[in-house]
Length: 151
Image 1 (tube, helix red, strand yellow):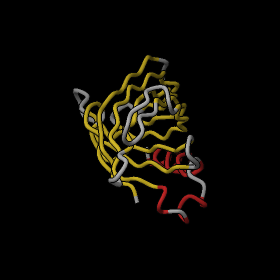
Image 2: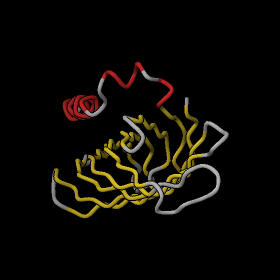
Image 3: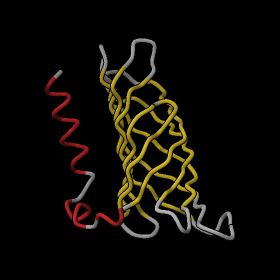
């Protein structure tokens, strides 16, 4: 079990380049509510690309710790609005669920993110579809709403 946790932490750390930590104005921290419910982090690489990480408690019948890390690409101007921005995004990443029988999966998140114009906040709605690759193959699904403070 410990080796699975160490492997997961190592794999997630590979998705977050060290240069991101030197640019704190391009990061956001907040909450996600749904399946899973927990902490949400987003690190912007540029205007259209970001790394999204979540660590959460999953409300499966037996309960579980859940984490995912995704690369996201944002499509602007699909939904033009007067203030702020409302990009649609799609991505690819991985997930880990730590419970009696841990799982590792691949996920494809799709969502919409409202970036406030005069506030350092963003609000998002996301659905993640995926497949478990360890220990067995099964369809996975997540979804939630959230808000982050950007600094």
